[in-house]
Length: 60
Image 1: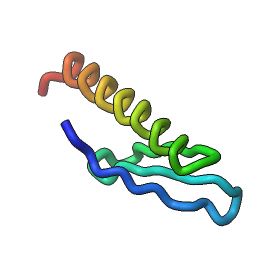
Image 2: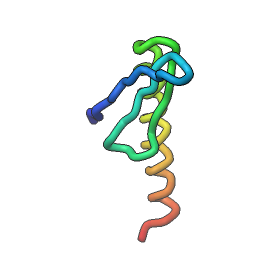
Image 3: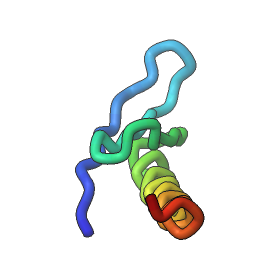
C-alpha cells in the first residue's frame, strides 16, 4: 500500500511534523525532514496494525 505523507516545518517548536491524510490522526515528528518521514512510516504501520486488531475484535 502507498500513503501520501506530508512533511511540514514546525515553526513553533522546531524540527518537522509529518502527517498521513489517508489515516486521520496519524502523524509523527523529527528533527529533520528525513527523520520525520522515517518516523511517520513507523506510525503508519502502527496505525494499520491497530485498525486490523480493532477489526478482529469488532467485526460489525
